[in-house]
Image 1 (cartoon, rainbow, N blue to C red):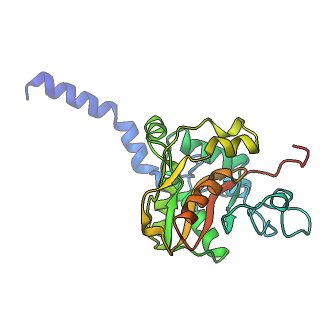
Image 2: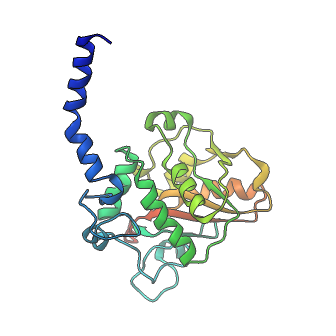
Image 3: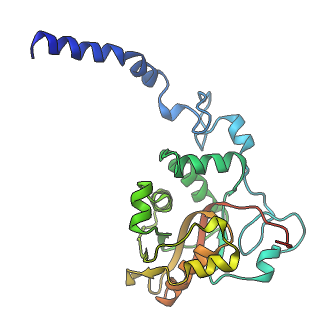
Length: 254
């Protein structure tokens, strides 16, 4: 290395020194995953007290089917009283709103994959809280094109995090074999038509097993229901669904 090359290398090292010092003094694991503030005490979810307080955790009175929080004394929400999926049940730790929405968006669209640790911990705790059962974890798949565009499948990342915490094997047993339109702009009927014949089971090992299906957001349940149909067709025992968030119920008139 000549003198000019050494000088350039030292210049780059010193230029990056403040950032190196910041990383050493405030490593990622002692700052809040959402706001970035320093954590002054050990926390379960890598969140500061303020973000934890503002996180829309689901309350104890929930729909026995989809797991959405309900404000009356009924056992089932209006949506599930009208239509029931082929899956056994869904459970979610969070309502898809506020800080939860911010966190999921940061993972999916901001590429902040470290959030999988926090979200996965919440999901694993929910599995335990409701005494859910699963012998194999299966993530909701993307097409190859969708996965290339985003760079990763968030459901798959969450599945492996939950599997690690619960000591349950993960098997990407379903493939998405059809390109589909964005679900968020479609009605319930259009969602079902959009996803019809979109999924196939590619691993027969699901036969006679209790499946825990993992996804990030439960909106109408159409996606997890279509995945559950092909799993049940492949002779699994049952399908339980675990999602990070569930959307609020819309009024019946919609």
